[in-house]
Image 1 (cartoon, rainbow, N blue to C red):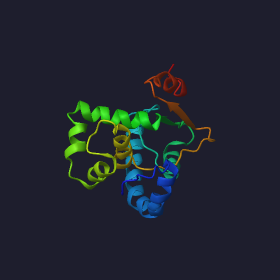
Image 2 (cartoon, rainbow, N blue to C red; image 1 turned 90 degrees about the vertical axis):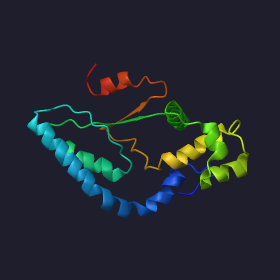
Image 3 (tube, one colour; image 1 turned 120 degrees about the vertical axis):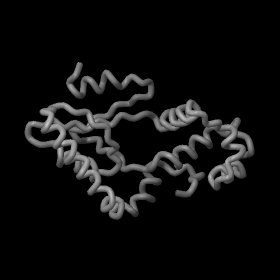
Length: 177
């Protein structure tokens, strides 16, 4: 997508990508159905009654699909969104990349790609002082807009994990504490 220098909200960015929902669903739903069928088969074969399955519910139809496969009699399906403040999430992404060898100052200065060129011409040639603009680039380049999770459903839980302290809440929700 294009670089958003207009500070569009997550909701506004989502409205833009929502235009392609039908084709995205047509392409991805068969994959997720096969994945869930294989997981259910594995659970049955191994007599598993508790499974924690990390999955990104990025559209409401994906929540419906999880429920279709796992929210049936004898199965207590819980959907837990573990998240952080957006700025914390983007900074953690940058920190992980730096840990893998990314030199953000060099990338800002020397990356010839269109997004970095636009950032330099708009905000200046040096990374120092432009950390927030780089985080905005990270948001748009590596985090796609998603439909907000429903807030009013009894099988959906939310955990904020800004300080890496969400484990106790997760254990309580899953009945493990």
